[in-house]
Length: 84
Image (tube, rainbow, N blue to C red; front, side, top):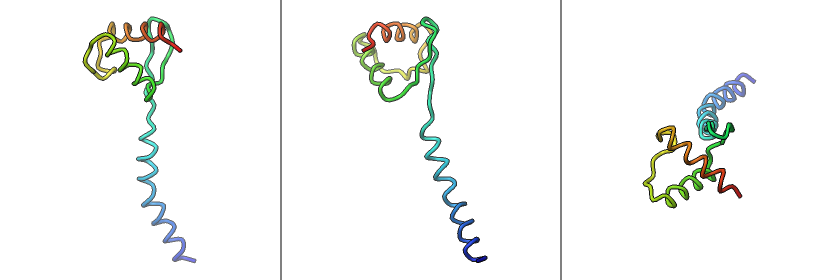
């Protein structure tokens, strides 16, 4: 019985970092739209829309979080005008 408990404790200790990494991979980024007073989860679909916006406005890619506030506001305004 003692051997089984030791094995289970060791297994749990080895698996804990994997669970933490998998959980950290699901980090949710939420941006607040200051103009429209709502919040948006930044996921793959939102990133695709943002890249559409950049192409349409002939801009090079800059990570959204690094944009100036007025550029973020311009994106959210475009985004609200182009909702499907």
